[in-house]
Image (tube, rainbow, N blue to C red; front, side, top):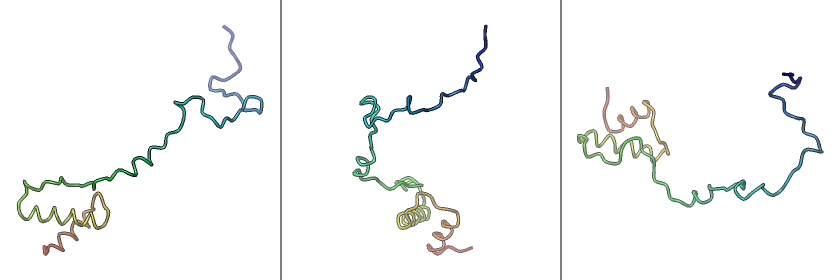
Length: 96
């Protein structure tokens, strides 16, 4: 078996003879479809760190969950940091 001098990862050089630019896609399935415009019209609900049901919590736990949800809505946050949670807890009147 004769070995070739061309490496296996060789790509041919692009020259004006073998390069063409087409303004049309090769087929309809190759066409780019921008789905963002359709998705932008859909109203999206707020993403929450905690579930929307606080029925299984104690009264204090429910108050904290509601306060955290309100903080996240006001500050457009999906998740909050520990420092932010301490701040929310402080606004509810708790202290160390």
